[in-house]
Every structure is written in C-alpha cells, then in structure tokens.
Amino acid sequence: MAKQGNIRISSENMMPIIKKWLYSDKDIFLREIVANGVDAITKFKKLVGMGEAQEDGAEYCIKIGIDKDAKTLTVEDNGLGMTEEEVEKYITQIAFSGAADFLSKYEKAGGEGIIGHFGLGFYSAYMVSDDIEIFTKSYKADAKGVRWESDGENTYTIEECDKQDRGTKIVMHIADEEKEFLDEGRIRSLIEKYCAFMPYNIYLNYTGKDDKALNDTQPLYLKNPKDCTDEEYKEFYRKTFHDFHDPLFWIHLNMDYPFRLKGILYFPKVKSKVELERGKVKLYCNQVFIADNIKEVIPEYLLLLNGVIDCPDIPLNVSRSFLQNDRQVQKISKHITKKVADKLTGLFKTDREKFCSCWNDISVFIKLGCIKDEDFYSKVKDIIVYKDLNGEYKTLQEFVGKAEEGKTEETAEGKAEEKAEEKKEEPKEAATIYYVSDEVGQAQYISMFKNAGLNAIVCDTFIDPHFVSYLEYKETGKYKFLRIDADVDAALKAGESNADDDKALVEAFKAALKNTTIAVKAEKFKSDAIPAVINVSEFSRRFGEMNAFYGLAGADADRDMTIVINTANPAVQAFTGLDADKQKFVANQIYYMAMLSYKKLSPEEMQDFTSNNMELLNKFIG
Image (tube, rainbow, N blue to C red):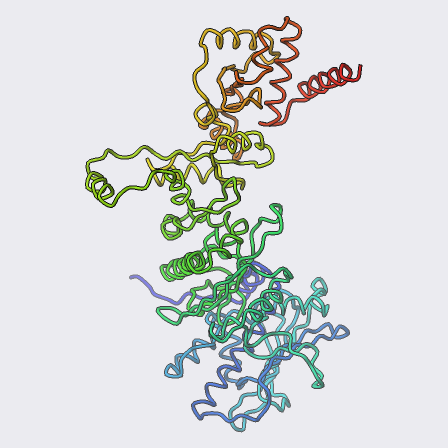
C-alpha cells in the first residue's frame, strides 16, 4: 500500500546552501538586514494607522553601528518588534516569511512598502558572521524583551532580556575572514549602493547629535514630474551617478496602472568615442536596490543610458537579485521603450535644434535600438537625422527631397494632372544616397562632390555600416546607399572620352604600376584637379567590414579595388608621352596619392612614396 509523508528540510543542510549559493554577492547581507528593519517599521506604521498601535514620538529610523574591538556589526530598527513566540515562528523557521504572514492578517491594509516575501533575508547575515544575536521587544502591551542567539548551525538559544525600547537589534559577530565589513568606509559604500533610497533615515555610528542620514528617503523619481525643476534633475543625476557633466535630457517615468513604475532615465553626454560604453540603470523595488542593468527590464540598447527604475510590482527570485522572466516584466520593458521613443519624437517635434545638437551623443543607441527592436524602429524611423556635407541635419526624406529642388514651378493645373497620373506610374527606382564614413580621410572625395554640386550624408559611427544595410532591408526599394568612394563614375563623370585613347592609357598605366593586382580604369572627371581616385564596390567593402567587425576571415575589399585615372588631369594627359622610367615614377606616385585618400599605405609602399618625394625635392632644389 502506498505511503504518504511530509518532506523534511534540515537546517544542517539548508545553511550551507544559503551561505554559498542563495546570493550572488555576500555584501547583499546588509541590504537584507536593513530591508527587514524597513519592513518592521512599515508594518508598525500600518498598525498605527489602523489604531492597533500607538506612536511614541521617536523618529522612525535604522541605526547601524560598528564595534571593531568586539568585531560586531549592528543593525537596529524601531519597528513593531517581536515577542518570544514570534521569534520562534519567524526566525527559527527558515523560509517562513513574516512579511507574508503580516499581509495575510492585515490584507485590507494593503502591502505597499513591505519588501520581504521569502523569509530568507535574515539568514544572509551568516555569509559574513560566525554568530548572530537578536535583541527584540514587541510593540504589544506588557511585552518583554527577547534575546535569541545562534551560530548558524542547527541549534539556538532564546531567553528573556531587559531591552527597554520597541524594535529589533541584530548583532552580527563578523567572521575573522570577513573583517572588511568592520570598516566604516566599506559599510558606507554598501549603504550608498543598496540603501540609498530606503524610506527611513539610516544612520551610521549614531550619536544623537547632528547625525546626518546616509540615504535619501524621498528621491526625486518619487515626485510628480510637474513638481521637479531642471536643476533638481541635474543634481539628482550628479549625486546618483557621480558624473559632473550635465545630462543631455531625461525622461521621468510615473505610472500607477496597470503596474506601478517610477523612475528617471538620463541621456548622458558622450565626451569621446572611447567613452561610448554601457551606462548604469539601477533597478529598485520599493526603494530597495535590486541590481544594475537588468536586461529583462531595460533592453540592451537602452543600457547606454543612466537611470533609476523603481517597480514594486516586479517579480523577483528568492534572492531578490534576479527577475522572474514573465509577461509582467515584458509589459514593463515595452512601456519603458515606448516612453523613450515618445520622448525622442516629442523633442524632435518641439525643439529640433536641441534634438540635432544632441544627435552625435544619442545616435548610436537609437540606431542600435532600431536594429534590435522593430517596434522601436517603427516609432523613431521618421526622426532619425543625418548630417550632410554642409553640416545641416536632415531626415532621409528631407535629404532625398532636396534632390527634387530646382525644378520649375508648376501650375496648379499641371500639378493636378500629375497627381491624377501618379496612380499609373511604375514604382520609382530606389533613391541613391551617398555617404561619408570618415570626413578627414575622405576629404578628397568630399571636395570633388562639393565641386560637382553633389551632397552626401555623414555616417561615421561604428554601427553605421550595419545600419545602412538595415535601412536598405527595412525600406526595400526606397533607398540605396553608396559610400562616397564607391561610385565616383556615376557621381563625377563628365562625359565620354576617346575609347581607343583610354584603352592605350590604361594599358600603359597598368604596366607601369608596381601593384599588379589592382584594376585600372580611365574616366573623364568634371574637375581636372585630381589625377586619380580609388573605387571599391559597395558590396565588397561592406562584406569585408562585416567580417572584420566579427573577427572573421573572408572577403577582402581590396581585391575588388579599382584605381580610376582622370583623363581631364594634365599629368594623366601627358602620361603616354613619357618614357618608360618616367611612366613608372608618375604612375606609382599617382597610385600612392590616390591610396592615401582611401587608406594607409603598406610599409613598403610608404617607403617607396617617401623616396619618390625626396627625389622630387632634390630636383626642385637642384
């Protein structure tokens, strides 16, 4: 016959698990003990509100004390305290939550502000302690003080004590190998990290004389946005993130339904490309720090921002260090993303000048967000701007539209006829958009473009090669992107020249080059100032850049490289009339000059180029 029984959990087996595996960082113990004190005060205040307890006029607070001689760290609260029966119930039963028990008894009072759920926080202190004492006294009439002590194994002692005041004091006897937690600076840093916004004042080594709380009980993100000034936002940013550069702008999140969410996200100023790195978004639950940069709540591309998010409804795991990845978390994440997109589109529409002035700092995260999140792309695609060769910021629609300018004005009747015929027209060919990836290195090409009355956009961040490919995919048939050095023929060609002459020129030029692998082509440019330029097909270069970005071997863009010599240039025109030695000198010098506008020369090429220049100098001097 089948038997039934209860599963038993032995504290001898449980404690090693709590000490080693429950929490990701041992310093979390201070957060847990302080949070228990916060809960005790919050519970007492709720009882006062229901008329079941009386205040004594004392300030609600948490006091932390360090005694290096005694090797103890103490955390004391003036919350509701415990009777001997409650100590036996809540402390000696591992994973029995006093918070959950309180909420079940006083369900109508609401659970706002109560943090604990799992009944394990107290035992986290054994990660750093050899022995722990509890001194507590309940708020209840005629309650007596209680002392509890255990070394964290399977035994404890409990007895009456003479504690006079309501509340609980936890005395942790710090283990010899954990002496760092007896250092005042270390404890201050932990309070700043984990307890910065807890709702009751926290004092360290309390004396009662002009003590200053170490935390901010009413952080700015809890206030109504309309009650906050720009200077308050900046000051909160400086204090929280230790960044003395003002943020570009910010988003104040303030939501009570369908979930509670408050916080501020800041867009930091990127002082250099080297500093373009992950920011810090701090996640809190009821003003208790949970973790930095939790990707389940904050999408990866938004982690370039700095911010504070407080969500009491967020589902946490048993150690309060990680999230349970459920639908609620996904809803919160989507809401945050939407608010960011709304802020960006609002700023673009209401203060475009400021939006464009911030663009260099925010463009990377916006483009990364578009690639990572199609929904985000759909919200912001029409506000993505690009700097052109004149330094003006335009959307792609505006940039392409400029090409249509210059047409003669049409009559209203003509426009009406054209509009009527639009439906009959075939789909338009994709608009070609030229772009620059390096304004300094591609200065020669930029000069040619400007002289030819052409324009291009600047795409000079690490993500732009991927982003232009993404745009071509998302806007199929609408845009075609070519780097400024990818199609000089179509952009700068002045007209056809003599085919036979060009063929002879190309053959002679190619024969004179030391680089025998590069293709040679002759075209007549609109300008005669430049003897030659380097062309690499857009596809080959992008494929090579993609492989290089991911550290892969693959297509080498240089294998598809062409030197286009300008038949309008006097040096090129005179080339076929030179003797063989001079052709070699001129051809390679033209090649080196063209290559320098495209990329660095190899050591051998640079040595040869320098030698040629010295020869020219000597001839000039002589």
